[in-house]
Image 1 (cartoon, one colour):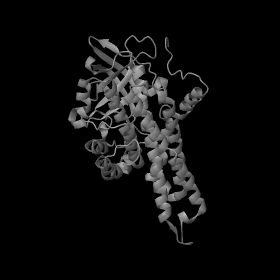
Image 2 (cartoon, helix red, strand yellow):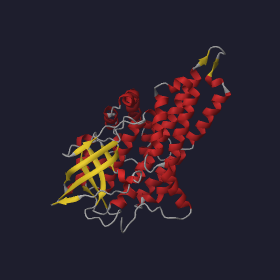
Image 3 (tube, rainbow, N blue to C red):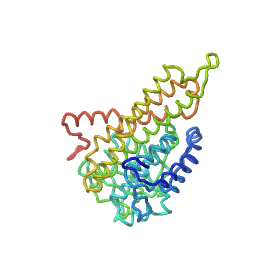
Length: 396
């Protein structure tokens, strides 16, 4: 790789591309049609080493930076957004353990089974909707252990993950910002997940999950009680936002590539003209290309900045608003480009397949928290010097 910020390791990227081409591509349409979780895809990415992209080498990871993580999410997203989201949530959960876990936790959850354990975030609750960082649920104590009696509304890889990084309020919480994180074994008694059936990203199983008095030993508390707000700002959000944006950028690029390929090859026999020979078609494609190209430099700049902050020991939340802006723009680009691809390919694109799937999958980009509506308000507040007010500390 010759791009600034990315690892100059041809072999690593060759392994990633081989896993995507050999496994992710072949399963994408079937997984979407059947709502089938992409286990084989994750396994292929894990065997290529990329599920531990940010993890320390001493715990079996690649020890790379955010630029490489986001590049991997982008490449996966070009082929299958469902697998891309599973990947992003896993790397985010692993990175939260990297940053706030102890060596015992890293050994058991990151290195275990050669790094093939699938993790995910479990944060959002129905009562607070798209404000996924804000929970009304609260853990309780049972001796040295904790009990979780919690309903989560959207958890990617629900019912499929080997471990969940669960966010809730500290026992006896003083306010909404008094948050604690736990690593919960995916086979713990009391976990109940429900089927996922949605318009798009149908294979990522981002459904509701219930923790029915699930016991969590103290050794699997992540960080300290009350440290959850810091973890949200500096552990969860940076990886989550740049990863999401990269997946939606990949979706946009994949939809554009598919549209270009079709317009170059399909010929109107009555006029002996390819679709690409029509000026109107080329203008649609040109407008889509400009949108897609706006994302890559921004992604690399933000990822490089995240790595610089981490090396300097500074809070990554310093770029929270720019990361949010990137997520918003990537989501909107994905929707516009997928729609343009559907337009220029006509009935072919409308038929069930990669272009039609990208159109449905892209809608998830708008809604995923922070939704674009909420996120634009954050951006506006920051622009005029108002606080984001994500938490109402000191009371309900």
